[in-house]
Image (tube, rainbow, N blue to C red; front, side, top):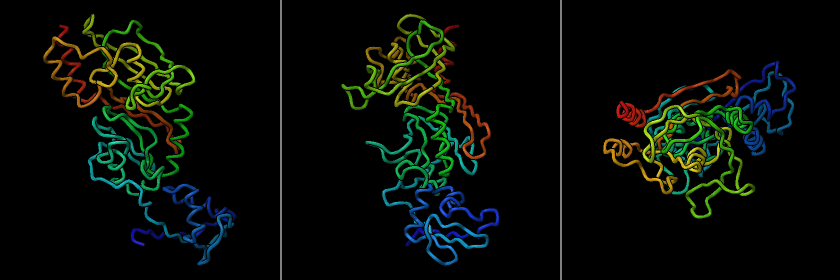
Length: 325
């Protein structure tokens, strides 16, 4: 079959007595153990020329051969789209996602995704995670820019998803919100679920109808007063719900600049033509994933990355600071 990849290795003395499926999964790190077991059951793995079971105990010197098939036909097709790579090693890929790029295929958007671009860069990611979301362990909204980590191997995928579930991944965002929050810092602990009035919106919902969502925020800089006030806010996620920061800040009456979905009755600030032009050029929402920290899923080294604000937001801040002088 076209696209099949042969693989072979001799069992080292230290691995004597190991189960075949565990030993093989530890070397074909782009495949899950379940996938490896499937290959063995299909007869695509042989030990010294013989088909054996997944529980076969290996002996030193045995030759293990495998034929790895191409990704399933329902998998994502790679697209040669440039990536802004912040860090890359054998297991993880950290990217600065531009606004306007969707993280993975979804309703109404199947091309030009980050997942497809990453797949073109690392073809072996096709076997990591799910076929339509290869390597994707978390996401950023289309209109949000900044740091996102992808898994290049199944070992990295398993490790990163576990850290996200345990809430040990640190994610820091910078947002430019409308209005002036009364408190300089605080915590929003409010469940988020699908908005019953709109299929494309999320909303803060009564307890029991959504998933718990926790956002910690801190005011960094204030601009203006009254209806036209804007505020630069740092947000840290303890959970990762869809549109979480956008929904939480909007629920306080402070929707993000450029966010038509959640601005409610509050329109974009008026009376400043230059600001209006800059907002129109945002290309998304005034939200940027500026910091990302996690434990390397394989080496266990502490990993921390920062990403400066893009020009699309920095130009607005520069305008606001100069306006106040």
